Length: 549
Image (tube, helix red, strand yellow):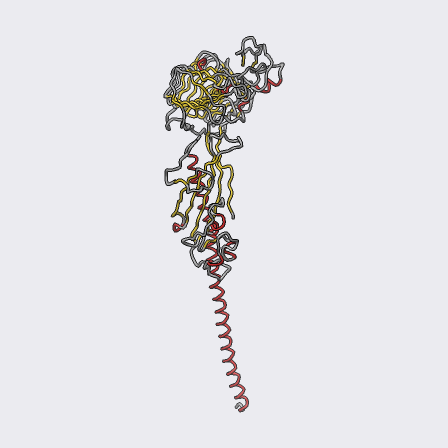
């Protein structure tokens, strides 16, 4: 039997056990409250951070979508002089425009998850004054603003302070909100960018309220025109049927005079009787320079249909053919796995062009290659001479003309010396070789005459452009005997055929090519890398930058 003392000790121990349990429970409750508070705060801040991070990324997606929309609009018309973007929701930008203008703008909203994204795009028309791009052809600046709406409390995740505006946000001040708000470029009540920078060019900075908390990101794209440069003799997308066995495709360099070659009696330039100047194309064993210039008559075919007659002094590419080296028929490399496409050619703007009819001479009075004298023909079936209106002016002897024919060309065209003529046509071109009378001379001519232009190849003074018809419709270019041709042809939708025993100097781009008889096709290497001003095949993005202010 326990003594009274032992019973008292047991009762005291039982009392202490209850206190310890109570303390443990209180400790658990306190720790749980602390943990719950931490969890709630972390969850809240995580949700805010996640939403703001999501909005930050989506704002860039929205801006880039706007940039794509603006770029697509620019690409709708090629070789534009005045592009009024007034369809599909585009309107004239309010004054002052971001640039001297003109400028156009469009807002696209209600896309993305929960329709929380929008973009505002502004297209500015710019003119290059450096001479890199012809002044008659604009380039464009595309500014896109992407906006992502933010959901949740109007605060940044590392601050418990709700943004209420007021003295922390004033026009033209560096304190445009509370700390992290600026760092993360979040607009809770006002657009912080407009408050300091206005439209981006410093016009009209103003305190502009926002309907909902948002993130805005801004990008700027520069779209510049792509000019086609003839980098080879022949380039066709459909099929190629080369010249006869007695013909050939080769090259020369009009900028380099060549020595007479008795074994190659084909005359490049002998249009000045008594001048004592005779230049020859083709290989000249006594002139290594001439020999080196002869092997760039490259042929590119965008299909597997390739038929060769005479030799090709250059490289050959096809898309699926089985062309191989056979003796010395092809002097360069062969690649049968080179697909490519040629973009269609749109009609140029003829605003301000003079109406003309065949049978009467016309005068090219402009000495500015970027602003040629313009003429419009319903068709061209009678002979016409394009005269040099500046021939009497020794300081500016050159003249430039741009002709648009809304129909067929079947009449003789004479281009006087010192005249560069760009001839666009919507119909077919069917002429004799002698009907294309290019009276200019090459840079390699040893005895110059007044009115001779040595800045470009002779063939570049007569340029033909086939305006692409509706899809599925092809054009026809037929050149028959007799005479030689000095010209370039860019006609992406044209089937081109040349018949007879003649020589063609220049370059050809078309749908297909057929060279019957013993024709010689001679590509002028000076065309390589030289943009034929006035024809734009596409636009490309030259720069991309995000405005991070």
